[in-house]
Length: 139
Image (cartoon, helix red, strand yellow):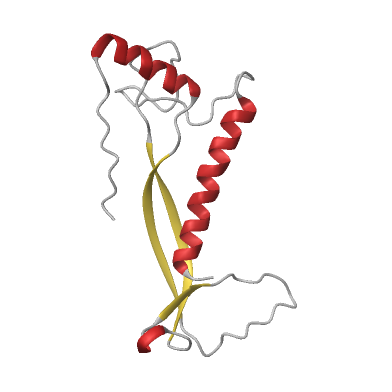
């Protein structure tokens, strides 16, 4: 799998799982991605506070091994692929001629707000006016 595809698949999986779990666990006392207040105290959640309406930005950390190969690349460029390491006594690797590099990076991500966060934001907006949102993509 190429690096771009791996990143897209990972973030889609995280976002999709978050939204699915929010729906499945609503009303069961579990809050996936609880709202934050200005203190951003991650250890507690005050669901009744209209101040707790902020959406958390979390970093998705990646630590991947990649290979660079000119084989199959477009216009003579380099094609980067994410590789998986096999574990076990019988594992054989056919990539001995390729150089493996390790790449670490993070991507900030704001997940869908929980129902509690949406409710708190509505209460906050009633008393303080609309919440400014700047979610324009810079990519």
